[in-house]
Length: 306
Image (tube, rainbow, N blue to C red):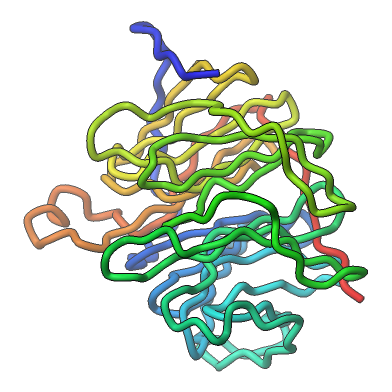
């Protein structure tokens, strides 16, 4: 399955919701219980929270890069820090305080050339994530893992990656989607959540424009995959057979991730690498954008804890 873009593909413009000015906002998710957004400013090691009811934002500092965030079954958050999975409850701690962390599992702690990057809860209460390779030659030294309350940390049988991204799942959870961003291809395969196994890999879609890479992604209840295109300032919506049917644009070059929440698509962005001239033309870069569509829905998945 390879993407094809029709000349008349519908487009829309998202508006700025939170002017957070993050260097690298990523991993955005929605908590239905709190009606709030969470996301990470990865390299700054900062966790963000935005209350959609009152419009207020808060953030907390961490001691190392924060690659991804997931909702936990008990109301806390699972945090993918550089070399470990932790649980924290930011709602019990003051703004700007350093979060109290409970360790779940160390991840490649003996390898200084990798860190946790993208991750997402699957449809069965497990957490699936990838490690990014920071090797100066861009080697594919990162791996994909599943963590579960019953089996702990298990490596998924997937090719090594440089920058793992776009981890998400079909509505029933029988298929996984992911990418190695520099390869500019979204991959899909059969996923066994109980055995931590993936097979029958195939290309779901290709991003063919030079300099544009697939980043974070989410799948809606209709089985469409929404993927942030890093460098293009947009989120592309793919049908289940890999065709682009819609594009949502933001006034920022680096769209990084997206999440669906009750008729809205929220998009995170970055300002990393932008000079003063570029920031003057895209002042909202590093913020959170929103596009509204009343029929847009996605399930809210949580990681089961021991």
